Image (cartoon, rainbow, N blue to C red; front, side, top):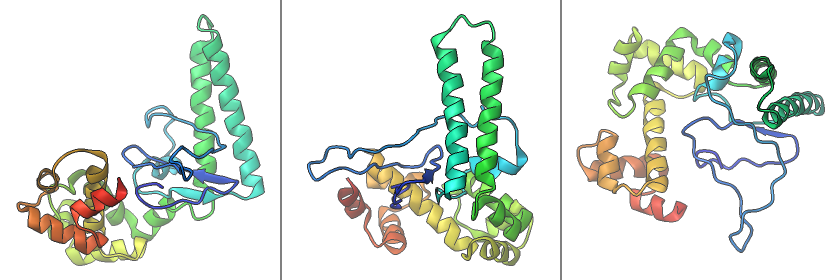
Length: 237
């Protein structure tokens, strides 16, 4: 599961989990982690080279999963094998005088992987940006920065430099949802993350997300998810 959405990990599945997203791995009936066979690559957002065409992959809005074709899988498998070989060679020889060159090579190899991902069918990020245009791109970055401070479409429109009507049209073109729906969904997601993965009280979480009263927060989450805050926390844990 990525942010509470199940992802079926059949062979040739590619998952992209971004910072802040909640992960949950499957378990067998006894509660022990199920066996998974895969390659895990961890990197910071600052490590790959600057690649404008791959930038949507590094934000919080792109797709989380792909089912790769045999050809795409083979190409990515070769690329990741080369990254692993270079990384382990550098790790095994800390006195290597060419370590700086190896780091730069790793940056470029990772950049190549991201570019391969960016051209996968239905990659989402670039397509959404094109459909919604600059207005949608500006909105989603502002939403990520301000969702705990305001849920007003009008205020986001002012910050984005357009009318509320233009903003909602851009959001609908990119996602099929209105600006208000996207704002509420982002607040609800953060509430779910905090309820399951912190011990903060329901009231404290509500205040963090801009609700003056716990009852208002409870009604909001019930409307968005079908669960009360306490019920969601109990069920997911």
